Image 1 (cartoon, rainbow, N blue to C red):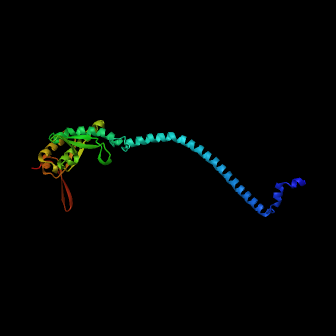
Image 2 (tube, one colour; image 1 turned 90 degrees about the horizontal axis):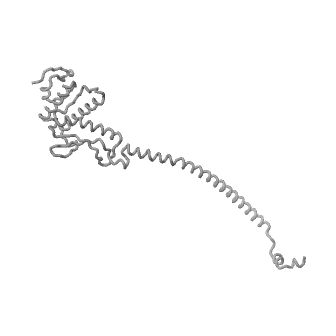
Image 3 (tube, rainbow, N blue to C red; image 1 turned 180 degrees about the vertical axis):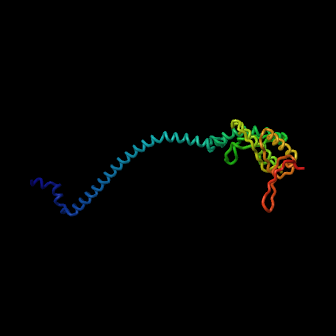
Length: 258
């Protein structure tokens, strides 16, 4: 035992100052508290890792479910863009309803041109245009007028007042013809035309009235609302409305004016 105590290591330990037990206990308590907190944080981190793994698995499942829905959405969205005219693939910027109406408009234009040729002395022909409109506007139902005098197509807003009137009248009559043809022969028997005759020159007025007379010959009733004196000389059956202080008076006239 004496030899053991004489060992240098034990002698060095004996020479050390006495241990501070109170300090050691304090450090032990601090280390124990730190360990407890660290263990709790590690448990929380493990729980969160498990929860994130569960959420990741759920997310993968939802993504797999969404992928076919996204494919369907892209298809529907592309079709919507084509139908609405907003898709870059729709180069004419033409909506579906405009596309359908354009086909019917061509029929109306063909019917209108039959009478427009006579009204304009074979000068004007209506042409349906599906040219792309400027500044991204929707296209498909535009009309232009082919002028035989110049050989060029004109925008309808370049027509004079009289020209616009009989072009509009030809379109209205063409529309009536198409509706009648597609309604099982159910005719549009009555047509009223309000004003516009005052913008026509004498020759064109006679051409228009001849066409309207031809409608009456096919059992159609044509009512004209106008202040043009020439009409009073051409039309025998008239309703003359005069105003006075007591109101308006309606007179049925059956003879052409002098």
